[in-house]
Amino acid sequence: MAQIFERKGWLKKNNLKILHRLNKLQLNWIISRHFKPFDKKDLIIKNFVYLLRLANLNEQDYFDSIMLIKLLLIYYHLQHVKNSKVQAQGEQILKVLQDLGQKVINNKFEFNWEAKIFEQNNLNDKTERYYNFHQLYSIIAQIYVQPFLQQENYQLFYNYGYLVTFLINLTVMKKIFKDYENVDLYKIKLNVIWEYQYAIAKITPLYFNQFIQRNNYFLKKY
Image (cartoon, rainbow, N blue to C red):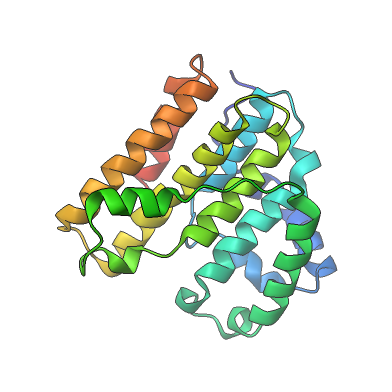
């Protein structure tokens, strides 16, 4: 279990390699400082790395996948990053995303969990600003599923990546909007939590508790 889970962030351990890769991609190093605003505990990457280790895969072989996840988060929330140097690189970030996406995502699998869950809870004026992030969730989920496409239950890895990202984004956006008494949003989050827990329970009943405990621990820090 110690080989699967760890406290130290993946990005922190690989900081020099990330800076070198950013330079190679013609992106300013300042972007590395903004890797954390929307996943400040690297939870999306932690879960991806945990799944790779669970399958005895080397996360270093998926470095481009991890870079793609982080740059996606930066790009989709660019309007909230209050740094002119980052803002100015929007077009280059998009180009890198397109290039890395073609390299990383070889087979596409898609399901719109966002639409399904919001439909169950009736989209309204209290929740509509949390809607329309499906493309972000889906691309990250497609990154999650690529190493596991040969497995019969590969769709569970897509679901898990999608729902973890969905949950983190709702948590972070709620804090940005200071929307602490939104009952409708709370109901949506409960649905997301149930579905993501179901996915990881199916992927690994043995380590289910460890995944949930670690996610809960870090989610409290958002």
